[in-house]
Image: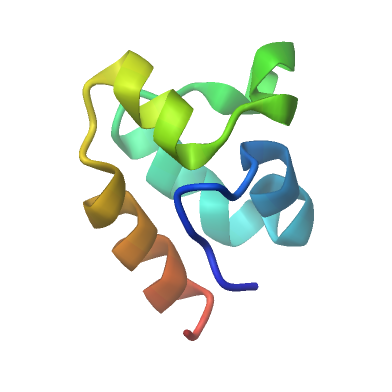
Amino acid sequence: MVVSKDTVIGDILDENLEIAAPFFLGIGMHCLGCPASRGETIEEACAVHGVDPDELIAKLNEAFGN
């Protein structure tokens, strides 16, 4: 999976919860239990939480082997 600003958080978690979860939890995004996250994009979630989406995307893509 290649992650971009338009990637939905629910899709990332469905792809590989074990890889993705620590990144979200580590920056205060407790998306794992939030029903709203199922339809929220990385860009939208980062804006709400004051996180740089490009940094998170780079880390997730590296973890997913991209």
